[in-house]
Amino acid sequence: MSNCFGLFFNRKLKMGISLLWMASSFQLSKSLAFSLQSSHSRPLLRAPLSARLISRPQIIDRRAIFARNMSSSSNQQPSSSPSQSSSAFSISSRALQTLDPCVILMKQIISQHASKWENDPQGIFSLAQGVVHWRPPNSAYEALSSAAQENMMEPSENNGGFGMDGSIGGGDGRIIHTYCPDEGYPPLLSALKDKLERENGLENPHVMVTSGANQAYVNCVLTLLDENDPKGNISKCVVFEPYYFNHVMAVQSIRGGVGCGGTAAGDNAKSIEGLLVGPTNKGVPDLKWLRSQLEQNKYGEGSDNNLSGNSIRVVTLVNPGNPTGVSLPYEFLEEITKLTKEYGVWLVMDNTYEHFDVQKKNKLPNSDSDTGPEYPCFDEEHVINIFSFSKGYAMAGFRVGYIALSSKNGEEGMGTHAYEQMLKVQDTIAICTTRISQMAALGALQAGREWVYDQVKTLDVGRAAILEAISGLEEIIGGDGAMYVMGKLPDGVDDQKFASSLVEHYGVAVIPGSFCGFSGWVRGGFSNLP
Image (cartoon, rainbow, N blue to C red):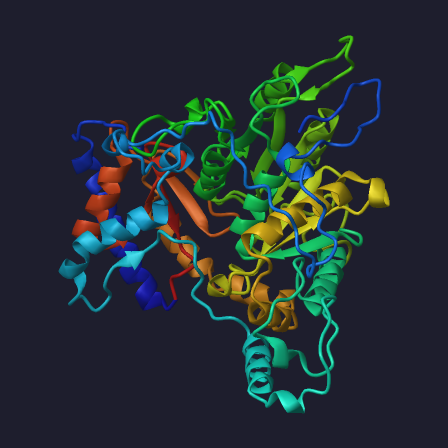
């Protein structure tokens, strides 16, 4: 971003902040609406996964025809919205209880005021969505071009067919219009395993390519969560506020069951029994609270039936943080990894912003820049790592993410067990991520991590501009990770009304904190500023 543009943006946002004091007179309103056998005296045992998956046949060959269990309980009555109460055409209560997508809500707000800014040379600055201003590396486009040209060749020119294992008789580009194995395009899988070992310290993990990191998380929720644990208690998933809204939406819309409620227009997400929303301190999750919840949700220790475990199945962590923009240090990540292992609970780590740990907080102790993985992850059976090509490689529209699960202890390992069951979910939702997108991702990887770092450095000016512009706020978190900062509005200011007014009067769009379970705050992103 040029100095001239930076000053202009800074001044425009600063003027918008003056709305805070005008808005402080607004009336405040709330509009937003694994059961492991574990004890201190026994080793960690296998984690039971979702019973809905385990009861289904194992996927062995993509060409096989599987019997799908389409039956549903005859006495299960989905709830209806008020307007549908007398109609037979009802909508799933889980869909109705799921938060509305906040990016769509923000686009609606922007569209309401777009006409006012259509003649402004600068238009509306959107700091709402986490997109980057750069394009994918040339190597991604070269892979696309090569694949497309090969695909246009006559079939007779292809010297052979291809197998479900990804082996082919001709160039890979000639089959970009076809399915590939559920787990992913074999050359990409191989490259990702190399990357994960070299850059993240994960040794020969199971890898599954998904349609973005969001589908990766949905795969985890469907694989790991039941509606109830073996003792009849509601299975729970932990997130921390301010939370990434799509994680909450996944749990709301999928887990279901009595008590998994809360609507976008009504109850706060904290009231959802199947979703525990934990506190943070300046964006850092409260591990004392987490230990207390894990202790409270233990069951079965010392009982006659020897059935023990935890009603909390999954703890979710995003690092660097969305929406907080906070990078967590290696020591903290190590502590939460040990804590979840102690209580026999899965830890899902969303590493979408691994390239944006700008202060290198997640670094192995006593290591320098030339030793150890660039962004270390924990190679533990109970840890599932999620990654994405959307941010660092600027490939959001290609929809390529991936999951890494531990292969420790081979076929008897928990990671292997979860991976095998997750293939059922993968086959049900997407079958596979589009082959051409995976080929582009393979091309992007060739550019290397340093290419991404060079792009991330260009965010320094935008980061400084937004931090300076909101410096007058009472409290600010973030800026040292991902591409976000959050600011606390004056007491009594409605964050959604403020966000709407900021667009209307000053042409700047931000995300209201209430969309992330953090009322009275706003989130601004700076990665899409050129």
